Figure (cartoon, helix red, strand yellow):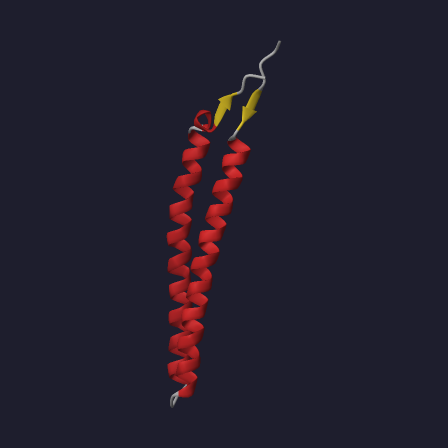
Length: 94
């Protein structure tokens, strides 16, 4: 009887991928909600084109910083999976 190997790489990868995308999505939605609310409050105040332009630029910079931060976090996690794949599979006794 030949032993079969069940690779957990796919399962682990999908679990991690789902967790990562869920976390990233939540962070991006939080950022969007926060800055949408701030932008709406800015519109309710006495506003100038200069204030709105600066605020939009600030939102873009904040989004880029968050994108870099999330990229660095998940880049190291996925590199760990690629570098140590044996950790993500086990033998099954069928």
